[in-house]
Length: 81
Image (tube, rainbow, N blue to C red; front, side):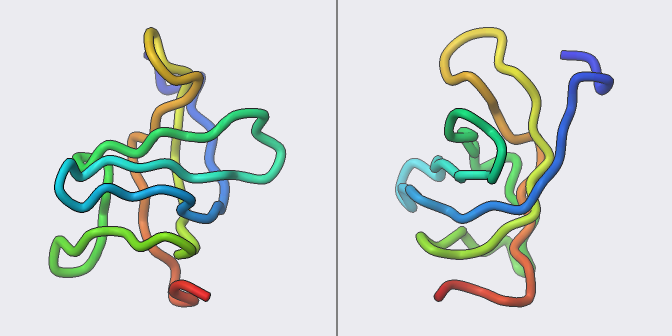
């Protein structure tokens, strides 16, 4: 997908499968969850995401599967609630 279709925002991790290294983020103003593959996670020390954690996410429409897919998800300093 072309970079022109990419969007960014802040969202909360609502699902994370540590074994499969996949999950989902809910971003305000986006009508569907954003799927997060492990390859998109940009976290210190290569750590995984946690449910409830606030992340900055760059995402684009998916060509198949979920409506949106993250190309980068980076935890903010706030951490999970």
